[in-house]
Length: 143
Image 1 (tube, rainbow, N blue to C red):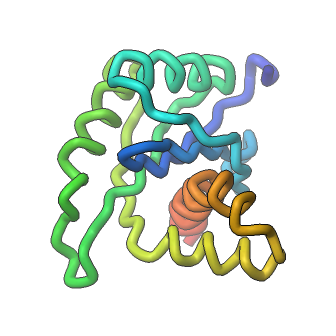
Image 2 (cartoon, rainbow, N blue to C red; image 1 turned 120 degrees about the horizontal axis):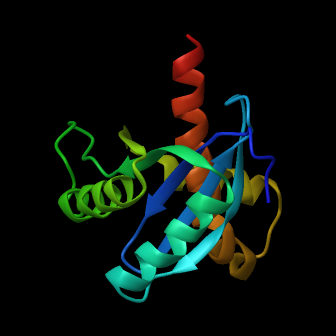
């Protein structure tokens, strides 16, 4: 649980089966992975994310939006944006769509360099991708 004065930003890497979750430090400088949620159904997914948002006093949600290399939105983009908007509305938090092109590949590269087993990489790749999405956003805000 965080101090009541802390306000953080949540990063999400939403997939069909899992949601990678990351959170910023209170100053909005660094992103840390929080975990991976196995998707069940929309209501359950929203409830679990809402709990995290309340626990960490999140004021903004950065959601990775899949895009093709030419910039067109990916097939899952509308569903992901709809989920993020529902979260933002339910909790009065701002939602930012962030280009997630190549973040999963970058996460896999980082985990390979860390010499994690294939099984362990599968368990945390979405969390690392969420942290990369959020860190990209945080870095852009300081420029």
